[in-house]
Image (cartoon, rainbow, N blue to C red):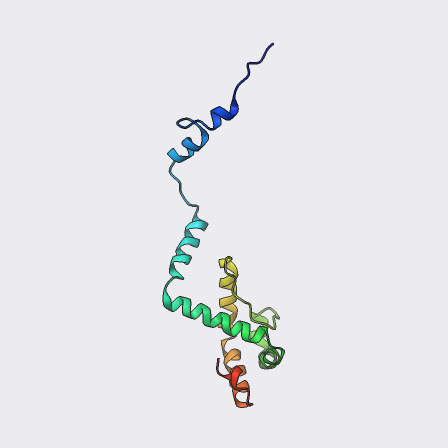
Length: 136
């Protein structure tokens, strides 16, 4: 039995009946996760949300990049066992990820839960002559 040679490359790349042309004919529908991601990206273009996210990130970095500030935060956190339980024994705030929206939600939830501790730590830093840290 003899097989006919068939030019697969030509069939795949045909201008009118090739794979690319057939894909273009199909309507593209985003999956629900992608639609949600697009909605979140669109919502995050709002100036209020951008400002809020930038503020949360700045505060997170402020504690993350200074041992002194992190220790103040951890000391304030140590006084609240219930909050420690809700944060699953975490002793740091979580930073926002640029591309992973689920981690952003987790970081914002952690920040919201620890908001009182964040404020008390900032007040402590301000009262103890640490002007730069107390200004945030």
